[in-house]
Image 1: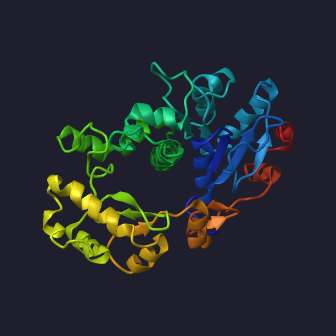
Image 2: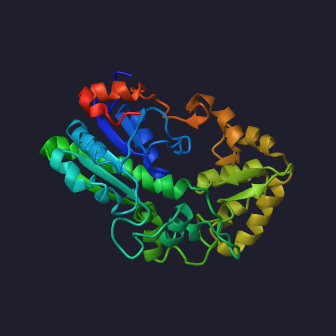
Length: 350
């Protein structure tokens, strides 16, 4: 892919879990030349996110291997690491050592809590970070327990996407100024940033701390999911008046709701009317009826169904960017040659 936007950008990735490898995969999908560093004997534990880049096995406890890695730094534009705070420093591969070798280097760090703070050195996972950020509270129906939304919002929506956008911005700055920088990406901070609109609404009295009582958290009957006649589910989300009117007509419910929809006292009866109407047809029947309308109605698809719906967006079962594929998928030796590494510096290659 000769027109890849990141063609010529070199990324050294230290293999980790979740958000760091997804970010590295995305950079590779955008055309970057990514080389992954893994522990000797380690299996591909990146959760299916190792696409688009070769890897080398390196014993980070070896002084010789660390010296070889430091020799790679002048050839790299970006380093990505997702270890706990202090791990890379103890290995002699912290930001100071690496940026000393290459002042333009963008050194991106991915953690759950950040490099400093009370929780910085403690373990956590997506659900942990969502809980502390306030995001998990949003996934709560009135009077029920919060629902874990898999690990999409924290690890990938917050962590990976913030890392990628920060790396791209830092690369532009490095090209302009000749100076790199260290990026401290924390999943918890990133998720709270994604919630900027909700926090703003909360600050202005437009969002309640009461779960399941707000416009976008299933408190509103025309922004919710309803069961169909066959047990399937239908997402109903006509927030704007004109779309709501179309939904009313499609569902065949009382048209007086069109003018009464913003009256919260009417919401219980409106919810019941929508639920009763949706239960009259199967999920796919509603999908066909709504397909060419602005009613903002859609079937809740399983992973298999969604993949069948958009087969061109998947490679080996994993979604890819719609407009491109990785520009570099060769072996580790080829990658090192492109990076200008001599034979003497290949001692650590598996």
